[in-house]
Amino acid sequence: DTEVTQTPKHLVMGMTNKKSLKCEQHMGHRAMYWYKQKAKKPPELMFVYSYEKLSINESVPSRFSPECPNSSLLNLHLHALQPEDSALYLCASSQGTHSTGTQYFGPGTRLTVL
Amino acid sequence: SQQGEEDPQALSIQEGENATMNCSYKTSINNLQWYRQNSGRGLVHLILIRSNEREKHSGRLRVTLDTSKKSSSLLITASRAADTASYFCATEGLNRDDKIIFGKGTRLHILP
Image (cartoon, rainbow over all chains, first blue to last red; front, side, top):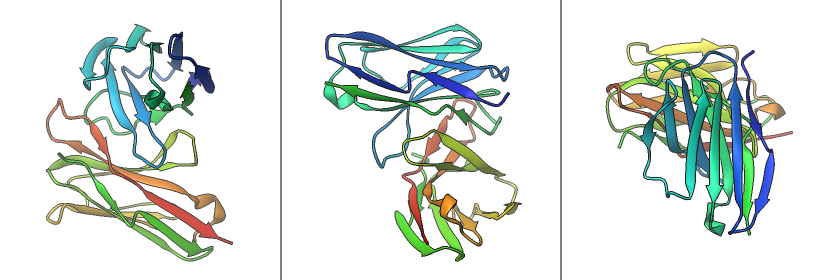
């Protein structure tokens, strides 16, 4: 199984809502990532988890809160978002965080903040 | 920053022609990867080339790496409509803490 799954596919939320994005992989990968991607732009790294511990936080606002309940799951909790946070949110995983090559990406969650 | 810069930003070619995209980066790297992204979807890994390699092939894909010029190229031969996508290079630095950085991408459109 070389698949990374993400739910939901689409999410529309108001600025006062609380929602969560979910990501799952069953490849035994020990590194998981959250990226944010705006239209016609490259993915921007948000967070990296290595062995279920947060290893990189790219100065992301606290309204985004990551969580890694176990080695297969990665969540991104959203609260009090702004319209400019509307984007495609991509989850990825890899065997490790360095010199391990390929990142496997999920299909993304298209988030719209009203 | 080690960020890659793709060139051109956008490319339109006729089906059957070859497509070449270039990537330049700024600092020494451990490896360079190419990814494809269909519109609004996740990225798909195409090929990885290590800093001690000069050329790699995978099916219709050919990747070259010139570390002295800090550049790479991706050649897609005999293009097909299904190759229409955005293509990103991504570089991994030498240090253990270095993360993979994506370039700005080339939007490839294959004309029927």
